[in-house]
Image (cartoon, rainbow, N blue to C red; front, side, top):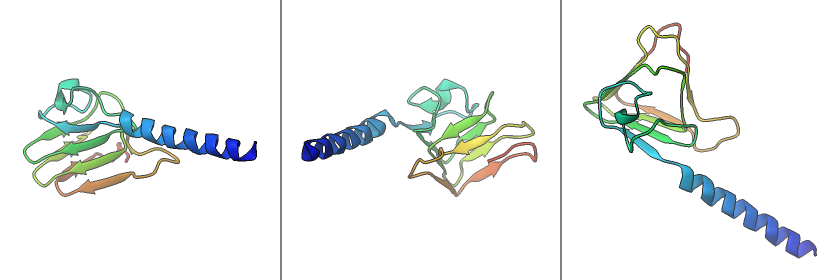
Amino acid sequence: MRMRTKITLLFVIIISSLISKVNATTYTAQASTGWSVTTTWSPNGTPTVTDDVIIPNGFAVTAPTANAICKTLTIDAGGSLDFGAAAFTLTVGASGQTGNSMNIAGTFNSSSASSV
């Protein structure tokens, strides 16, 4: 009985890990528009706490219409994220989540009213 419980628990952990990876999406900027505009990203949508975000060279993503969240944020050289004077919060990752990172080779602008 004890071995069966351990095997079941291991199976649940493995399946949960695979499901979280399946649900993760990498959003890459394909337009210089707002964070919350679904057509800013490829694939179309808005990044969530499980998603990776890449802003490549030549794209300037602007302030969201609400607070922004993602798992990882990469701003390539020549790319930019500009919160301007807006008072928004950008959250990269969530409490207890692993693999969170911010890599900025491009430009990140935020006002003193914003927080990261």
